[in-house]
Structure formats: C-alpha cells, structure tokens
Length: 84
Image (cartoon, rainbow, N blue to C red; front, top):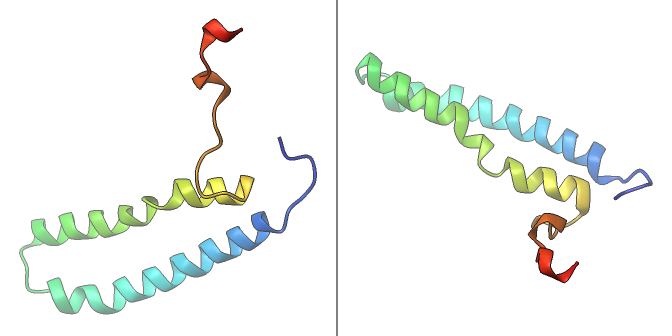
C-alpha cells in the first residue's frame, strides 16, 4: 500500500485528459468524412465502438498510476490457502 504521494497520479490524470481531448478531436475531425455516407445504424455502431474503445488500455494505465508497474500486483487472494 502506497503511503506517500507520487507524481504518477497527477501526471496520469493530466495525460489522460490530454489523450482524451486529442482522441476526441481526431474522431470528430476524421470520422464524419469516412463514415458520413454510411447508413445511420452503421454510424451509430461505429460511434459507440469509438466512444468505448479508449477504455481498453485504461485498466493498465490506472494500475501504473497507482503502483508504477503496468501489470497488476500479485493478489493475496491468489495465494494457496493451504499454505496458511
């Protein structure tokens, strides 16, 4: 458990905001040109996917902000109960 503040949390929040702004601008700028002629239902599906796809790397990013490692720490629950 972390007891002292770390630079990763404010840097991570700022980085996340910057990434989301850039991602949103890129999608708003280029997606209508590419899918503007598609049927409405297809555009809806694409915009839903694009609206949710940024969540894929979020778990590992939040783990990095908290621990400094990109992979989750070993869980105490994963230990063999027979060892105790």
